[in-house]
Image (cartoon, rainbow, N blue to C red; front, side, top):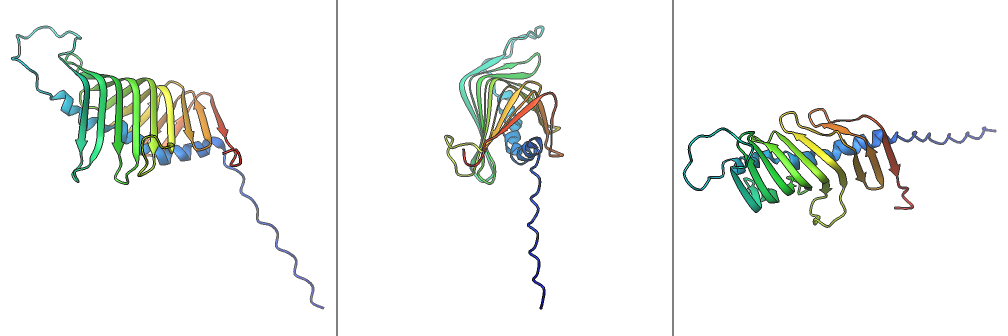
Length: 219
């Protein structure tokens, strides 16, 4: 009599990944477009080189007062294919010649990637140096990443909220020294601070971090 074959052992289930690992993976996948929205600094040259009205006056000691303002403005960048890919709007823009900085109230930045994905960044105030290599968003910062073809009211793929966010164009770094909340699907992370380096794809958190995962049944 041929002995009956023993049943194969059930496959081992891989242990669940730590929450922090999962969040880091999500951010590495979705943050590049958010970074692109903030690093639309090439558009700032339009502001910096806006022609001034009137003749230049006599030279005077530099003071921290704006040399020009733009109220309820909108700046657009059109790609080589004729499509709008970056738009920056705000309640008021001010340029300070002594520090060569641009300040915007109630800023709203919108960037479209080649695949149609949309990134939107909003804040009560934005501050940028003259060449756009250092951009800071302050107060009520809200970033959203939307899937291709989705309207602005669609549920975001990734959402980030906080009170401060800094984008460094030359080093391709997105960071905040203040607490941020990141949401993706049913995953939420509250972190004391973070730093994302696009060149290496690394996300680093320091201080306390708390995460929550919503079960599929509850979703």
